[in-house]
Amino acid sequence: MAKTFYITTPIYYTSGRLTIGHSYTTIICDVIKKYKENRGYDCFFLTGSDEHGQKVQEEAKKKGLTPKQYTDELVVKCKELWKLLKIDYDKFIRTTDDYHESTVQKIFSEYIKQEDVYKSSYEGWYCTPCESFWTETQVGEEHLCPDCNRPVHKETEESYFFKMSKYSDFLLKYYEEHNGFIEPISRQNEMVSNFIKPGLEDLCVSRTSFDWGVKVVEDPKHVVYVWIDALSNYITALGYKQDNHELFDKYWKNDEDHEILHVVGKEITRFHCIYWPIMLKALDLPLPTKIIGHGWVLMRGAKMSKSKGNVVYPEPLIERYGLDALRFFSACCVPFGSDGQFTPELYVDNINTSLVNNYGNLVSRTISMIDKYFDGIIPTNYGNFTNFDKELVEEMKNSKDRYEKLFDKYNISDAFKEVFDLLNKGNKYIDDTKPWELAKDENKKAELASVMNNLAMLIKEATILLSPVLVESAPKVYEAMGIKDTSYDHILDLNTIENNKVTKISPLFPRLDTKVEYEFIDSMMK
Ligand code: MSP
Image (tube, rainbow, N blue to C red; front, side):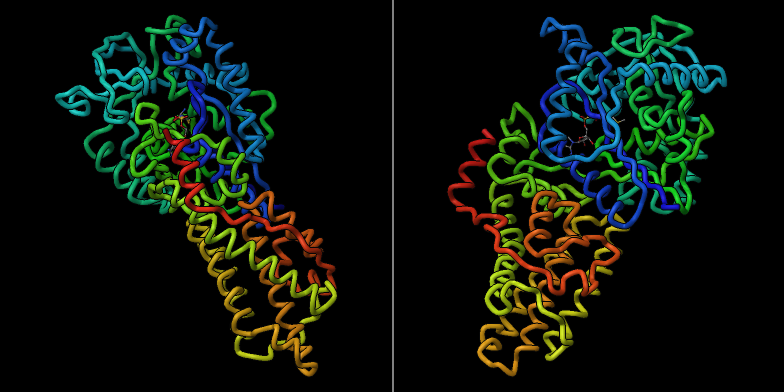
C-alpha cells in the first residue's frame, strides 16, 4: 500500500482579490503534492475559503449583499484563479458548507461538555481586520495591532473561552519530542519564548458582536470565533464526526506511513502551532506531522498593500510571461521558509537566466544536434569516452540524490537549485565535448552518440525533477523528445530515450527584453 500524504493550504479569506502572495502559498502546496506523487505517495490536497466573521459581514453590507452572496462571488473567483494556476487540489472546502458548520458545532459542544470551553467575559483590544484580541502589552502605547499595525479598539464581551493554559505542558513536551514538528525551527523558538513560556492565555472562542458565523448550539447568541471554525476545516473536510468518514480514517494519521503537512504563512503560524495542536489533543486526535511557516513575498522589501500601491496580481503576470514562469518564480526563486523579494528585475532576470538560457536553450540546442547528426533519432549510449562523460553521468545521479534529500526536508527552493545547477553543467558539457568537432570525424561517431544520449538523458531527468513546477513546459519537452515513460522510478533508464524520435519545437521561453519588461511590471505595481 502506498504511503499517504495529506497536504493543506490555509483557507483563504473571502474579503478581496487574491494576490501573488496568496498564489505563492497555493503554488508551493501544489508543487509539493506533485513531487510526492512523483515519489509514489497517495496524496490528498485540500484548499478552501474562510468565509465567516465580522469583516466579511461588513464588506457584504457595504455592497448591499448578504454575506453568503458576497462570499459566493469571491469563491467563484478564487476557484477560477486556482484553475488558471493549474492547482490540482482534491477538495475545496468552504466554511459555509453545511457539513462543516454542523461538525464545528459538534466539536464545540464536545469542548463544552468536557469543560475545555467555559463561559466568562472578556475585555481587550480588538483588531477588526484581523479579528483578533490583543493584550495591553501587545498593542503598546499607540494601540496598534501587532500583526497589521492598524489601530485597535477596546471591546468587552460575554464569551466562551478555551482553556489553552491547561495544555501548555503537553505542548512544550510535544515540541521537544517531535523534532521537525514546526519548520523552520526559528518559528518554533518564537512560539516557545513569545507565547508558551510567558504563560498561555485562555483563548476567547466565541463572539456576540456579530452573527455571521457558526452558532453555538447551547447558546445561539454566540457564534464560534473564526479560528476554531477555520482550523477545524482540516478535519471536517475529511469527514470527521460525519457519516462518511472514509477520507478521515485514511488520511488523518501520523506515523511512518502517513504524513500530514500544513503549509501556512508566518503570520498565522501561532494559530497553527499552538491552538490547533491543542484543539486536536482535546479531541484525542493525532497531531499533524509538520507545520511549515513560510515567509512572505515582499514587494521591494515591503509588505504588499493597496495603500502602498505595490500589489501584484497573478493574472496579468501569467498573461504576459506564462504560467510556468510564475510557478517557477514562486517555487525556485523565493528562499523557502524565509522572506523573499518580488521586484521586476528579479522576476525578469530569473526567467532569462534559468528558464530561457539554462533550460530552454539546452533543450533546443540538443534537439537541433540530434536532428542534424543522427537524423532526429536519439542514439545509443556507447559508454563513457572522456572524463567529461564520466563526470556528467555521475553528476546526473548525484543531483537526483541531493534533490531528493533537500525536497524531503522541504528545502524546496534549494532542491530546485540542484536542477538548475545540473542544467548549467549540461550546457558546459556541450562546450567541453564540442560535438560539432566530433561530427567531422567518422571515427568519433560512437563518442558523439554518447554525448547526444547523455544530453537527452540530462534533459529528461531535469524535466521530471522540474515537472512539479513546469506544468506546461514539461509535457512539451517529453513530446519533443519522444519520451513516453515519464515515471520518476525510471528517471535514468536508458531505454526510455534510446531510439526516440525528436521533433523541433519553438523556444520554450522567449528571451525577455529586460528594459521593456522591467517597465511593464513596474507599471503593474502602481
Ligand atoms: N483565513 C486565514 C487562514 C485560516 S487557515 C485555518 C488567512 N487567510 S489569508 O487569506 O489572509 O491568507 C492565506 C495565506 O496567504 C497565508 O498563509 C498568508 O501568509 C498567505 N499570503 C498572503 N500574502 C502573502 C505574501 N505576500 N507572501 C506570502 N504569503 C502571503 O490567513
